[in-house]
Image (tube, rainbow, N blue to C red):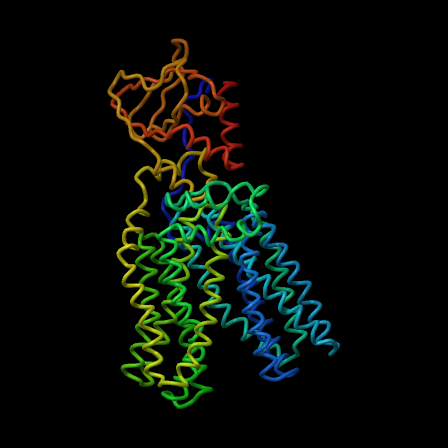
Length: 566
């Protein structure tokens, strides 16, 4: 088109199931398979290192290593999160995969040579710490790979299900290899999983570079402006802690973090509680502990399927609250009815609850936090959760020394359930704000906005304003200042230039972009041929979306060149 008016929107496929959407998105499929390799490898290598450490120094060596990992993880996670907000996320994932493969290779060599165990501990610890920036970068990358909010929730559900499966497959793989071979073989198998992950991540079509603009609440965006200044002038500490600052300023983020932090107190206490339940109630600490863990694992798979099935529903806050409460009520059940059956029911419910919390937590953070701060928000909540898990692991043994198992279960469970129920009205209000805006399908159908992530397109749809015109009304007049972008929602318009009819535009077609992109007056006149409804986007919102995303900007420039040359 020779003016800034009208281009047919690219066709979009019909609504797909959440499962099919995730599997049908090549980049989402690759990142999930990469996580599968990475997670299975992490579990297998950790199992092998624990076995090696136990042989090398007994239970104390295992305890010290795991304690050091936990403390260092809490301290270094914000730094890894900062990298996820400063580097292209795809490249960060590839770098951590490559470095972990190298570290585990070195550890395998020294284990095989049976020399310098300190080197093995150092390499194993560093490889563990690098898992955090990989996961934060992956979780921050998902919004730029998903095409719709439902697809994003589904991707988080698949991630949680893979995580649950990896918790079984990784240790099982390590156990099988340890029976047939030895620790160095398991470690080298872990190296292969990292290389598998690296190869898949390298094929993802976007770097996921931060700072492309995002949705979120007004509080989140305000927090982003004050918490993420120009890196050249912003102090390192302030920049690193920007995720904590944003969480403290946004009510939904703060409530979500508090709820899940209390839930992770239970998660940290759970291994101790399970072994005591297995001993006191089931009568077999070894077999009973294994059985309860297996039931939790099966429940996690079921919970992952449930979370994916609910991906398209606007119930993120309510589902998260239900998941948190389901970490509380089962403990109360066992306290009131301490039988083998109640222990199994409690384990199953906790297993189901875990993906409900994880999936909805990730999606809430991805929907609220600005993209340029998303990695640091994930890092902040992860640091909180590591700390609260440590609190749970330390608190429960003390409680069991001064009181009974039944009382300990009540003390641990009640604060979790109470905070979740108190926060439920706020989460319901949050869900009401997250309902899909009416113009979202129209925005998604435009070729200019097709490359944008779901959070950005949703924010654009919320910014649309509707205008109605009767037959013969002039929508845009040639030579007037360019201030709005137009999309035809219903009806038809005629585009003319210097009195010459250029074409007609109808539903799903747009005009007004050249005047905005080139900062020139309107180059054509647009008149309604029948009663017509259009939706408009203000200049600033349009330019921020298009110019803030490289692929969208390239599409826009191609459209401008084609129309000006027509």
